[in-house]
Length: 189
Image (cartoon, rainbow, N blue to C red):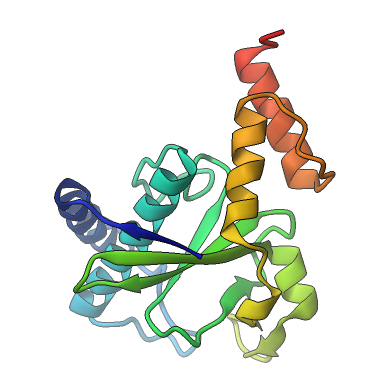
């Protein structure tokens, strides 16, 4: 676990982006029953998500655009799931790509502290997680935290790829990330 304390300027940006995303959501966050949370509740959820994404980006030295229409939440590479209860799990939804890595972040909004609890691919979460709401329009799997890989391992992988060092892993998403970085920057050798 790595703790990141959000800075004042990052907090202001997260509030702004959270509000902007809430205004542009349309039907995106309707429940399976067709209900949508109240605007203030959606704004709080989006603000918390922005805090978590900023914490991951800063911790792993990856970019964050704050855009809801993006390739992935952080660095074009990672998805981020935020929680407020330390007992909550990593959620993988049916439409989440199996190879995509997701970071689980516990957010303490009043203290502006984000605990990066660990990470796992959505495919792993779907294989080992407990199914929930499988008979609804929004099925998902809940992965207990003890199945998460340490965030320090993800930090090591990202650093190794950025510095063109061997990661010692053959996960499809890591191999694709290595190819992408090599194509972007070329060989430094």
